[in-house]
Image (cartoon, rainbow over all chains, first blue to last red; front, side, top):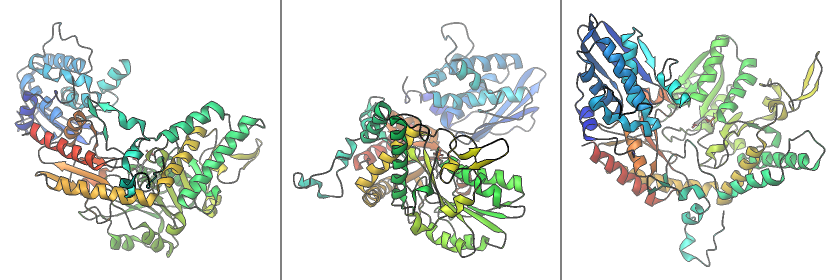
Length: 160
Length: 419
Ligand SMILES: Cc1ncc(COP(=O)(O)O)c(C=O)c1O
């Protein structure tokens, strides 16, 4: 994996035309995620109907990797249950940090276009930020950061 | 540095031969992603010439022991070399005396030393500290901590859209409560060279001492602390082709003598009993514990290296690089240079329409080009100029016009990927 091949067509497309970009009229949960290393931030709003995410949107200032990751994430989790979303969050983190074996069973589907970030340590946080923020929102934590104590990246890098 | 014999090589009659200079830097031969490294992140940290590497090796192989503590040969040698490095730094910035040169771990450490040693002793509730919008976080946060502790206030000098300090506004900030000024000599994010000499004169006319953050100036221009008349001048070794973990705080002897030590321990004392400790004289009062001896000696060799080329020669050559790069980048549609001050060092911060700086950085890396992306530890500048982040190419005297071309073609490649 070199740094250029991360910029695949699908990622560039989601960057250019992000899906579910904006705000929701009705949201039960929201969170903002910061990456203090680059000043980027991402707002995620979602509406839970019982246990199901019936709507989700994001907006913010971020790089292509982060924006595409957020865009694809919203398309994938919309309509899923909270538990399914948490499974995806976990798998996405594990893929990004290189601890997920992609040959074994997982639910990531098209999201595997981001697998390459595991070889670009400086960009792992960009890809994970939306997922980390979604996790915060689902757990009613309103702000989070890639440097936060609960940031999976701390543990993941330390353990690796 | 290899001296250039212009009689043998008439083509080298220009200022200096950059290829000769490059031969001194082993790291510049590196390949990144299969392409020759184009290192344009010198404002973050610059590279080390073989002469400095050799000096470090010599120290570790034949001179190392702890300093100021032994009567044996090695301790005396190490002490003498460490103090000789101090004198090299003294001459490098033209300080009056070697005891005005305190070795620290870097600019951040130097500023914190002034905050603790001077600020905590002399700043009181209601006092005002003047800083500028351009300051690096390292010249903001310590003063905020002090202001919070003492109930003092921070006043901030604004900047123009070009990234220049508004000197009139600076002058208007002064009043009877003004007790300290902190200003950076050269902006790390934009390259702006600030009129510090005039600002210092203005402050001194009102009895206010001035600390200058020289981290980005010392590597790129001749610095004369007596001419500037600054009270404190802080800079880092690793931006001066020297090692990490070493830096300098220059302070006027009279001020250093009045200051409180910041760290307590060995070497900074004359005598210790449980009733009373008497502090050592300056600069030792501020150098508690075993200092980074090798790094200090390496930094001494680094400033010798730079002085042999000549800081004026370096400034003149880097200005050519800047002018060429600015001209080339201005021809690219959709690219905007951030920081267009009339007087600049060779720093080129830029943004690209529709492309986040982070992505520029990753894609330039693919071309072997190393630039910094992000907020460069100057979030107030980014906020003021309304950009979340920039990509920054920062040049050194070992960069070439051909490397500018590689940067420009790299930027074109980025544009292609994103259209
Ligand atoms: C203007 C300026 N001040 C202070 C610093 C901090 O230097 P250091 O990290 O070496 O302490 C830097 C380095 O990035 C700088 O550019």
